[in-house]
Length: 161
Image 1 (tube, helix red, strand yellow):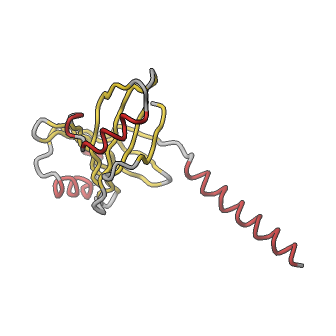
Image 2 (spheres, one colour; image 1 turned 90 degrees about the vertical axis):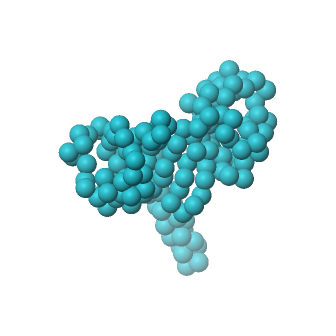
Image 3 (tube, helix red, strand yellow; image 1 turned 90 degrees about the horizontal axis):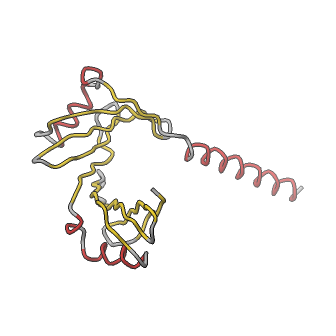
């Protein structure tokens, strides 16, 4: 009887893992939409957080089964991207920054990852909960990489680009 309960737990865990894995590998679907197709709540959310946004383009995307709107815009000559849900709630805001604007600790961590390194570009990502991350595109040891580090210079992601 104890063995049957153990097998049921294993099966239940495997089923749960399989569902999570299926969600994590779901591809992102994106479609650029016309401004008149953007939900009013998304535009309200954009103007609330970025009142001077101009040159706006929007992609309607599906991430993990959620419909999100990736809004690309310019403020003060800088390119930005922000993700909003259908209700206009902000998920994240990305801003292109100069490599020299990366904190020295983040730059030092990146330099330790490769023998040969060229830093291509960087973005700072502001999350609604206050977290800050840095997304950095590099050529490291002859290959293109996308790195994500937190504000404490901890490497969160290292993926081939």
